[in-house]
Each structure stands twice: as structure tokens, then as C-alpha cells.
Length: 404
Image 1: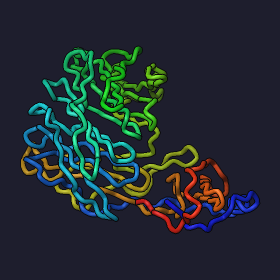
Image 2: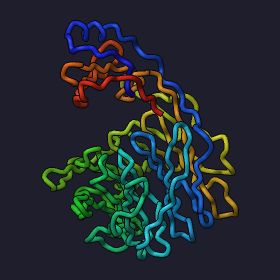
Image 3: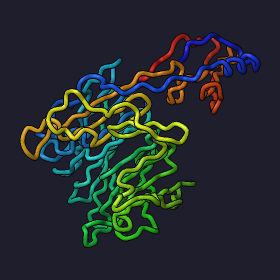
Image 4: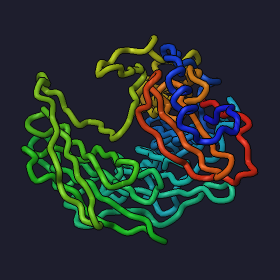
């Protein structure tokens, strides 16, 4: 969001005055549905669109997975936002997948919306795989052959969960049935890390050293820089569940911690889903203030869902935009469903919000040097900031862009 400001030199006294007078912002607005549901064209049969969804950081691209399209071959649909309207842009399926790979079972997008990854756990007799697509010259296309981790033990079902770093150059692929099975049919599980440098290369297989039983490790998430991974195992310790943190240094991954809540009750299955550095929720939105989480507004329910859509089966959230998947929307027959996704937005409550926390921030620009400086504010307090760079001195800040 670019605020309307004058060219003000970086003078200490002026900056201090502006910071002290900056007002506290009102509570954040609620989410509302933006446009009709998102249903990709050219679906073949009951695709179960919405089983997986992902949203780019600038809220301009959405990817929706439909793993049962075309008799379980699967596909993904890309939607692009033009103004406040979402448009179905492209349907894609990898050409080197097996006949019933269920592509789109899981999906992820890089922060800039130019790299996408999809998983198909039943590919090649449940070995599983993941496929990468990139956006170039306005067209999405497959980037490489499928990603399959080495040293898998049995039918790992790689691609059950996938994640990407912010720049799209690190991918993690979860296979919860690796090294399977115990009496309950669960595997130890594992996750594979791939990096992109020209092509894609396998970097590591991650397996926790202190899992209890066949944990089903395979829920995955990556930090923005790709140097921290979290892997969930919901069946660790007899369904109590846990998550493990791994970090990368110099291309080498090491286990850092095992996480589980001490106050979980019963078969909590902690780690069934995981996220890193995320502020999102599900079909209910919760916000944090002073360390306390509270529900924000009413639950998000689409107005044009058909039948028992199971909205909230998959979710993605960034700043003021949310995507909610409902794989059983519009069921043409028992046991089959077309599926859909819905976009929800909330209006910005601050007109100069760089950190997406609902509070106005301050942008300063030195017209002599061209340096821009951002102050991240909490009311009248400066809580962070930095310089995004130095644009040419003949530029001027003339407006702002509000999200979404």
C-alpha cells in the first residue's frame, strides 16, 4: 500500500512529531465474499475442485486443485484477479503423471505468484510425486519432470502435502506413508526437500529421530527464506501427534525441535496440518491482540454454495484476502462432486498499512537522495521498519494501492 505523502526530507524533529501524532487504528473489518464462487472451466467429471487451494502473497493469483478430474487423473486451475473480479485463467495437468495420479491433491504458490507446485500421492502405484509450474510471458507451463524423492521406503505417497519458499526456489514434499505400515496402516513418514538452480535437485530427506511409533510425518510448511521447515506427524505417540522443526545451514538440514502441546486432550492428532510464519485461520477467522486470540466476526459461509459443499476443507489466507475450498460443492451424483472455491475479502482499515496489521504505517522519502524509509507503527509507537531502496530522485509518491 503506497500512501499519499509529500516529498519530505529525513529530518529528525519532523519525523518524531509525525510519529507521536499518528492515531490508533480502529478494529479490523470483517471478511465478506468477493464475487461468485471460483469454478474452473473444462472440468471432466466430478473434479472435487477445492480439495486444495493456495493464494499468492499479493492476492493476485489463486490455484485450486481438483484431484478427481478426468477419472482421478487430476488437474489444477489458476485464477487471476483483475480489479475486484476473479477470472478463470488456465487449467493444467502434467503430461508425465500416471493415469490416476490425482494431481492437485495438494497445491502451493510462491509469494510472488510465479511458481506453483502440485502433489499427486497415488502416482506410480502410490509412490507419489510433485510437479512444478512457472508463469512466463503470461502463461503457466510445466517447468520440469516430476519430483520424486529418493530412498523412499515402500509406497510413500509423496505429494500428500507440498510447500514452497517465498521465491519458489525451495520445495518440500510430504510422504506420510513412507516406511509403512504398522497394525493401524500408518507409516513413519518423511518429507523431501528440493532446490531449484537452473533445474530441480533433491537436497534432503527429513525424518524425525525421536518420533514415537509410526507418526505419519508428511504435513509440511516452509519459512519464507526456505531455511526452516516444519513437518507434522498426527499419529505420533498413539494419535497425540507432534510436529518437528528442521533448519538448513550451508545446504545441510538438521532437526531442531519436536513440538507438541502439553495440554492436548485425547487423540488430538497434533501436526495434521502445519504452517510457518502465518497469520491465518480457516472458515473462521481469528486475530491476535496482546497475546490473546479471538474470533473476528461471523464464520465465512458462501452465499452460492450448492448442497453440502464442505466449505473450509482447504483454506489460504494473506492479509485482507482469503480463499476457502469446498470439494463437495454441486454433487451431481452420490459419491461425486464438482467442487468449488470462494474468495473473501475485508476492507483495509488503514490507508497506509505496509505490515498488514490493520494499522497505518509511515513512509518517508528523501527527495535529495531518493531513499525511502518505512516506519511500522502500533498507534504512536514505532515497532519496526526499514528501507525498501532508493528510487530515482525525479520520482514522486502519487497514490496508494489498497489490498485487496
